[in-house]
Length: 165
Image (cartoon, rainbow, N blue to C red):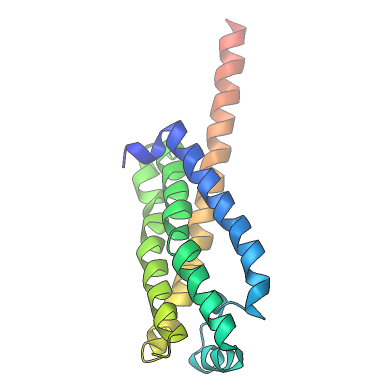
């Protein structure tokens, strides 16, 4: 836990998150529509799968495997690291949503990989995981932004106080 709050690690996690995000932007147009990550309802996921060509399914599978299995580690680590770094005594508690979203997202991704290869038996679990992931991601992101803002305020106060001496 101590490691992820160090400046070089936070920068590396930020750059990884940004690079993977750009990868999604580049890759998603090849999928012919909405990505499975944003769909929770079983019937909607099945409809989307049925609408995809085999090439689109293979492309979505590779995107999920190459980008989306690493993404939760990058953004989750970044959000947790910011909460730990700038959250003060509450940092460990503030990091919980970021740490919780990682396994939820990875499990959702695993279900999507199986579904893209024809095994849709766990889509009812995905129907639960996708909204949970979304809420945890949003909460962790808001906490991270708030923690970063708090850190910026503390830095400015420190510099102002240092210059007053």
